[in-house]
Length: 514
Ligand SMILES: [Zn+2]
Image (cartoon, rainbow, N blue to C red):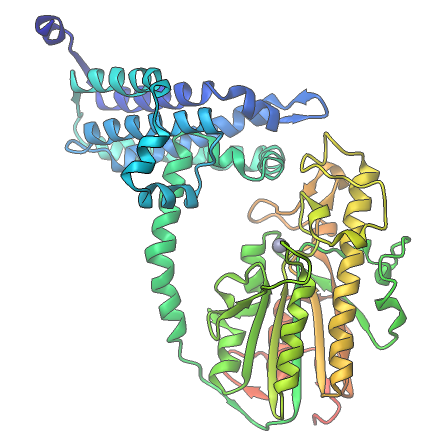
């Protein structure tokens, strides 16, 4: 036996090994779940096989880049063996438990104690261990990998090609991959081995080390500026999610989705414009300029500032910190209206001076499960779509009805915020705008987001921007109002003089302003 093993040995070049090993691991780990992936690329009973192939090639290219970057003479065998073991575990858990390998899963794995691990393992794992770990381990140990001269320079060429392929496919098949990502609720990303656990491990490092470091740095931010004159004024900025002008009757939609707001003649509906179709990057468009969050400026200059959120503003309200909704009105589920009691409390405590309240209405109209964004009593437009697979399982009419119900609920929430402000009899200026809009099958597009450098289509770019003020104001007439202009306008309302401010971008003047 020993002799057989000793005779069993290979010599192989570095590039052949790298490409051969990564390709084998990628194919062997994902072929077993091919059916699952193809379901997510099935649109109207037709398999989008070009989209599926593009997704696989893209994920493989990223894996290859990672492998080439970390594999050198002293690390290559160790990395290959480690990847084999991790892939074995991952493939097994995806197969047996339909697990999603995301950040929380990696965190759980890191903090799971030994007894829990034992209960998860079973003899069923044995074929996986043999096929994905033992055989590769034997081959790797008996292989001599020959590194050519200047191998790293040469591998940079492959990295460059793989990168070019990934970017090109990302652009060319963006719609297919974006759609499958949304319909699967990101599960395609969490299921593709080993890209899933590599990506999630980076995410763990980012969340436990990098983000806290930058968050601490953000808290120590130095704000230059001053308030030229303190007045009694509360500015409320309500940031919505995925709601678009096209379905607001205030903007001319033929269904009555704004029965409450349309009765308030003092509400001004402006032509709001979003630039980015992703919440993560759209929120800083409104709240951050030159790396300085608006709430950091107001807080540091002594204005009582609060952020009450349903979901999260991410790090855009690190100062003063966000307060999440809890003990919500509807049992087991929080909705955007649960931010209002926090606003009420803030108003009750208010005595005088400036105050800034940011409300994050983060449920808004976010898909694909639009019907989960509003309480049942707002299900006015029917029949609705109850499936996340809005394309295959619902008609366009059901999709529209469900989205319209979310707008009906936005109408209720925004109107109630305004009512709360009106009842308080305090001086206020209120803003409501959405982070971006949504495509609902226009030109075959669905959900939100476009590849970098490509403008948002109209239905994603045109967002509602509603203003109401209890003090006399004048609004600069413009064809459209962009999100960053909100930042400068709020600085102006608070009479803040700071190098970050751009007076040209302010579009609201108090009538008392000179
Ligand atoms: Zn969003």
